[in-house]
Image 1 (cartoon, helix red, strand yellow):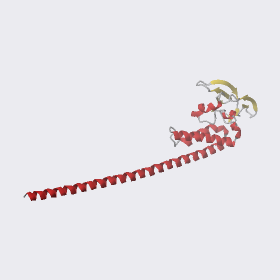
Image 2 (image 1 turned 120 degrees about the vertical axis):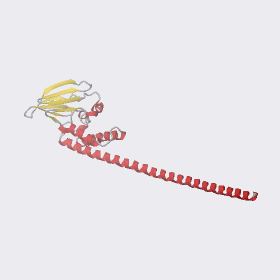
Image 3 (image 1 turned 180 degrees about the vertical axis):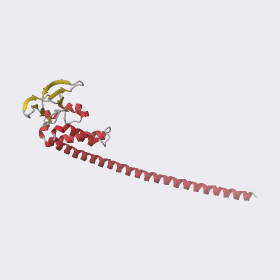
Image 4 (image 1 turned 90 degrees about the vertical axis):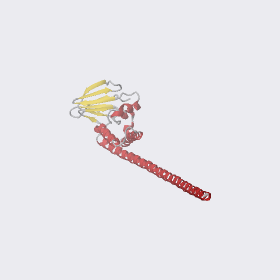
Length: 231
């Protein structure tokens, strides 16, 4: 009877050892499978991140190229219609940034690159715009003002950036010109409260880098005023 008990105990021990070995093998296979899965997951994640990075670069490059083309088209349009330069700049800038996150570094960088590109293209088309008197004018030199038109320096910067953009003009007077029926008014907008510089009777005026030419009803130039922004 004792022998029978020993046989049964030995058999139970063998079964326990066999079960323990199977359990250990299962745990090992599980750990190997998890390790292999983690390795494959890391590889997939790395490939995904690399693909996303490349896509972001491609999108950025495409946006920059699109902005360059917009700038070139805007510059050519402004050459044909200088009196609409402010509207063209505002419209083109909105078009270039409306699908970008303007609060992000990338969005801001694209906007800055766009403005710089457009200005460079305009200077290439009209080299005379490179003078500081031209850069600091409220309207692009060559622009004719008729009625109900307002321009503020610098002409090439969007409205929200004009004040900071004018810092490159140093001590020059940042000027706003307002044309109404038969009257041209010039204000200095250096501070929050615009300061009246002068008011002149005019039916039409032409803005140049150095002066403001006033025309009568017959389209004849009758007066020329030194530009407040020129030095």
